[in-house]
Image (cartoon, rainbow over all chains, first blue to last red; front, top):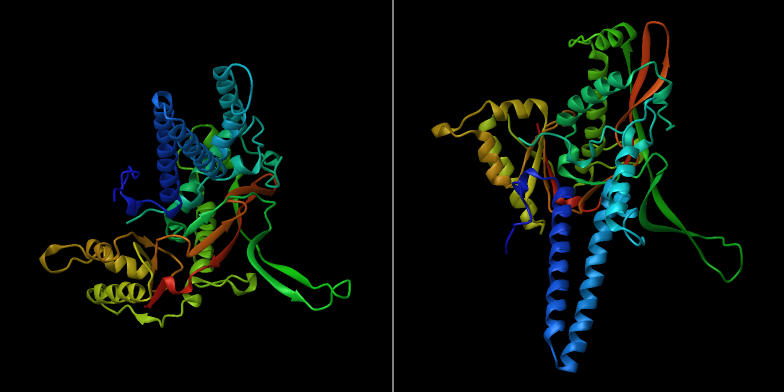
Length: 132
Length: 267
């Protein structure tokens, strides 16, 4: 069993970060599987095999979406940026740039120092403390 | 504007940045519990209770032939540590002073970090929080007076967790005195005791002010859940010509899901 999803020594990472890394690895694997099925479907000629692989790819769509939703729920800024890009019509790149600008502006204190609870927080979360 | 009322304080953006950075630097090393347990959230100031998934039977229901259940939840508790900052010191910071007196903030940061550690490890009965030590069914074992005895005690705790079916890796919170002894001790051959203990645990050793002795616990996840509402933040109370009254605040609950996933080693 490999542990390559950890870029840093696992024992120095909090449980929260380890879970996050596992889900990122899972998301990557689901995306790869979707791509593989897409290629297989493009060259397969047997109707029964095609039906099975379409069904299997549908499973990967579901897995990918669940992984993504989990990660977005755990990462407010990512969620905010994604909200402005996903399920929108129009220019994807424009939506991306605009959404990033909105989300990052929202997370910084305004000129008066007033902002919402999240940006007023010290942002320590679950990764506090120095591991000795 | 949030409930922290920061925009009402006579503090500039750079002043807030100074205070936030100082608080973060003081809090981060002392928040030991967060390195060893599952941190969920922050869910925001409005988050008031943790779902326990449990119910109580309501004997009398509004209608005959109908039964009722009432959901049981764990209310979030709030911790708040007050401190002050001199208006003159803040003005001097604007002029470029680099030695701003933030002793009161430093003290408040330490107090609230210790309070959080104590609530998680020893419990906070008034807030219905059962700590890791109190919840553990394992009998407390002595850590020993001399640091040379620590490896045997820690290995015993790890073995106890293994024989209870609790897998690793494991981590250990060490009280201030015990931590000092560990980092200053080298075993035969010059090997650091700290490294030896890390190898036994296969996980981190954390400096934990507020803990008396040591607590060895599993880091496999899902055993100890810290449910955060408002994460640590600085808020504003009031000010006069000389002093700004501020506070550090957080809201949270703590649930032990697997009491047998920790062993306390008493000092």
